[in-house]
Length: 398
Image (cartoon, rainbow, N blue to C red; front, side, top):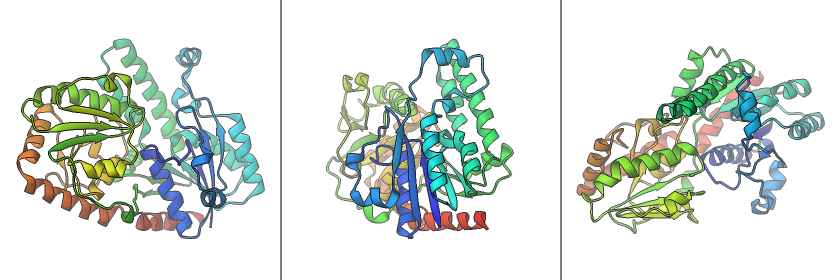
């Protein structure tokens, strides 16, 4: 089997959850001796860094990339107000990348073209025109939901209405492509149900984010009674959630937990957070090793208020045996059981209660962390997940 994997950003470096999700599939396919060719859009936010790629990776994937300027242009934003096209998606269409894609399809024959995310679906027509390969759309999120939820938290009437407009156009586009592909690899059961409710008739398989369990080895905690957060802060829902938590939760709770401290880590940490002075708060910015950082601390916080899909950092935290306090939205798509392998908190009061319970009951922390680790081993082993994806490919090809 030969697979062409098309990505909206370079999978490596593993700078965020989306990159990790794409790379997990690449590595899983290669481990099964499936031939993979990788084409990637690169952007100012996610540049193509060939220097960080191993010679073996370059040789095995034949990775090629084209820079696409996806920056928001004021004139384009204004003109889009009078169009039904999705501005979110149209920013990722580029003639040069399309030419590279066409050339690749003309020179090589593929069994499957794997579209990693909604933002590379504008190239479906080019794929159909140049290949008989089956097209599988790997849906990392229900994208329009992110924007619908974002609109709910915006106070400005003008901005709220504009975001609602973006969400409406994105939803229209997202629905339109569901039956243009030969199969959909949804990242969660919930997303699968959403797509079916939106009228999807294409075959759908749930293909969650998987990890290589050998890469996640717990080590003793260095910072006792420490709360921590880690996430890419150039993804707006992450910044929104942290801002809410510090204002609505920690500003009131810090005095209740004088012996505890919150550590914030993540790439692209905004300056307002780096400059922030708040009781028992340490803002670290990007850390050298996310796994080491998670291992060093005790209780993971995931106060996400918007977004869709699966939070990969939760899976990683669970794999390392951490107790996680998360909102319902943050935990969506994960096979969790409240108070067994995760703590769910959606209000400031619920967060404060959950933090208090963890800080005053070490047996609870150990129990939840152990159950979380067990659950991840049973449900998110990348070898099993990729095997299921390959079987889905085979059924689609037949």
